[in-house]
Structure formats: structure tokens, C-alpha cells
Image (cartoon, rainbow, N blue to C red; front, side, top):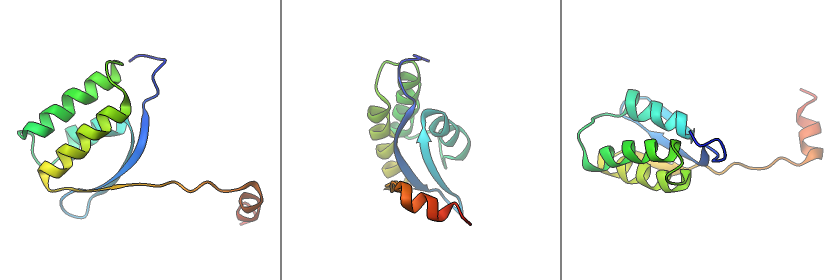
Length: 100
């Protein structure tokens, strides 16, 4: 892995078959989902996503470029994919929550 390349990207929520729901934030998490949780392994976009994951881990493409391949593979497999927006918590609000 290219150590100067971050492995994270804009998180993607995936509604995999059955009750399985995953939020994928890093290349490592994506590789795990593609290998362990994906419903089939013979789709053209799936194969492209696996290759893109390897390319992103090795620094040949950016994590965001991989993310686009992951979204295409999800579409091919009929997996609902959502962009996960993380809300930043201000210091004051964080202090209020930390009391609990």
C-alpha cells in the first residue's frame, strides 16, 4: 500500500441481501465486503471493483475513484447504496454529550 495515500473515502452505506447493512469507509472495509459479503462474484462491474480496490490500495488510483467502481458494482448487483454524510459536532455540543 502506498503509505502517502489515505485509504478512506466518502462513506457508502450498502443494503446487502438479507438483513445485512454495512457502512464502508475505507479500502480495507471495502475489500472485506467485496470478498465476504457480496452476493455474487461474476459480474463485470464486480470484477472491475475488485481490481479497482487493489489499484487503490497500491496507490494507482485514488480511493474516490475506487468508490465510483464500488457504486457501479452495487448498482449491477441490485444493492442499494447511499452516501453517508457525517455531521460535525461542535465543541459546545460535544461537551454536552460527553456528560452522559
